[in-house]
Image 1 (tube, one colour):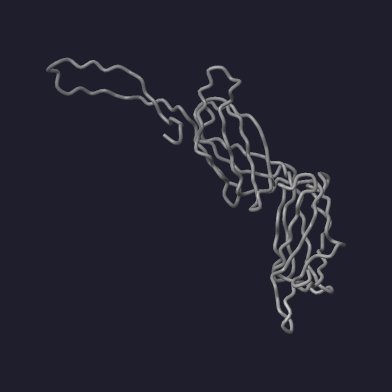
Image 2 (image 1 turned 135 degrees about the vertical axis):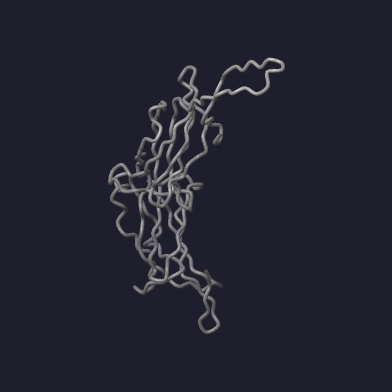
Length: 233
């Protein structure tokens, strides 16, 4: 058994008489589940997408549905997954979130599993739901590393994401389509006994990303920085 899924079953009767001694009795198992494998792929490009969580829920609209909730597979780095499913009908939700909690890929579909499906390949195609935003953080046109950039949704402040620029000043992240206020900060640093931080200028404190940019990505969003005295900032 895997999760709630019974792989084989048998139902029968055995009559044993007193004093009979040993008796041979064959048990012919019936397979009650199937093994299905495949890859998770982006629908638009056909690219393999790893790290997709695939949830199978028994379809409540189907009368006498024998489906069971299986262990939840997560596709590997190359998009491969395998799952053992009881016979029956399922609603499937395949999703992938980034480390910031932004929904990046999603698909919803239905599947009916029969014994003849054992060993078959069924690829799952997911749709991109977020916009890739990337750029550089610069001070006087010089790239600056370790700048934390916050994106807070204008209409729902509970929707936010953050990124940190690397050693080249570059960053990449995913945003749900919408309008965002942007703030950027560095750690404190000291020059001649005065503590400073880098912050973004008002010129780069807002971005809007649209559904039309989901497949193409947003234009480069380069964050311009200015230096502020910690005591007066």
